[in-house]
Image (tube, rainbow, N blue to C red):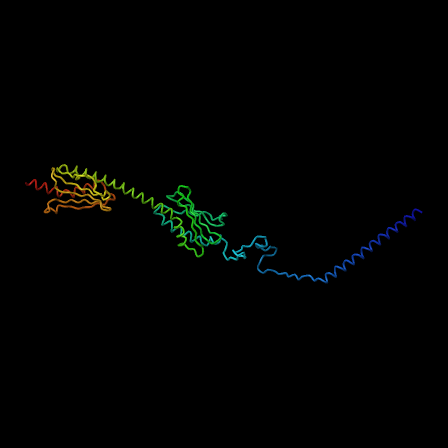
Length: 337
């Protein structure tokens, strides 16, 4: 009896399972039918497959553009995309480097008399603050670095030169100028550098002028000392002949001290036999002697000596040589009388 019950229960369960399976199969057929109908009503879009010629190799990915990676395209002032044909700043810099080097070489030859020079360039690098690319150079005075010179190419296509002193005491030489890089050559770069260095060169010229004026005054004092020493040496040599050369009163340089003109009297045994002028004329020292008697004009002398390298001994010989004819003539006349 139990076995019969179990067989009946098993048959019922198998029948229920088969009915569920048949129902799911019927439902799947209806869904497939609906999907195929929709596909027939809406055709799929055409897909075009292209192969780039000469581009990336097999397995390589193309380089993404600015738009592909989400970066904004450059725009003009009107908001429209800006299309520029300029190469990268690094390439532009390499193109103008020969002109810069040639200009620096020329400028250094011009700066040599002022003991200035522009040093060698360091490695080119970006200036993120100015969005520019360029190099630094030292500005040297007597081989001492006094300022930085930055030469850089901006994104706008300008070559900028910025000079900045190391110390605030020299802030007056700071300068900043620019020049369009299109068609730039050594001449234009040289003008840019000279204009940038103009405040410094003007300052050095003023200093040189003041030093020259001070040196001229010191030079005048040196000449005074040479003349004084030469007169002492001359009078020591003439003492044996009873002669001497003494300044006329007032014993000083006449109205214009820079002319270095001194008037003296040539005496023999207390007698005034001639007058002497010692005068500086440009780069020469002139000694002139004139006698009082017109008939003895041939005894007069006028000689000169370069100031540069003038020594006390050389000037003393010149003074004595100009004075001696008048002295000798006077002694000869008095001796025969």
